Image (cartoon, rainbow, N blue to C red; front, side, top):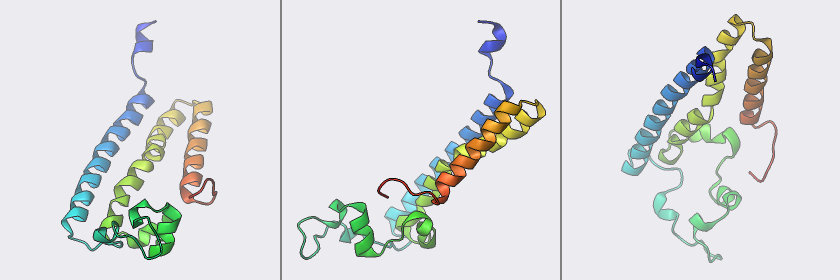
Length: 147
């Protein structure tokens, strides 16, 4: 293996740099929003003390229900509907989760100018397609699975 092959490329370093910064920001957001949640500084959409209750006509507490059942009982929005509840303590932490989930998109966008400058057409196409696929998946336009 040559010495050059052991070194990370410019785009690898850029991707890793964005990923590292984004990971730390996302982690900080998760910690802060969790503290806000457990402190009760913001009211919860679903009160935490209610989760251990067993609803009438059931033998399973709320926290043991399937996700779609819990959504129906508490009228919880699905998909990106959580954004309307971001002012509630139990949904505020979704901001950090969404940010971490979208981090790959930012990483690809960060390396795109480098790939274009290097005239690396095949990797430019791959990066653009990757961003498009991730945005399409995150949009919720295509529905798959049971969620």
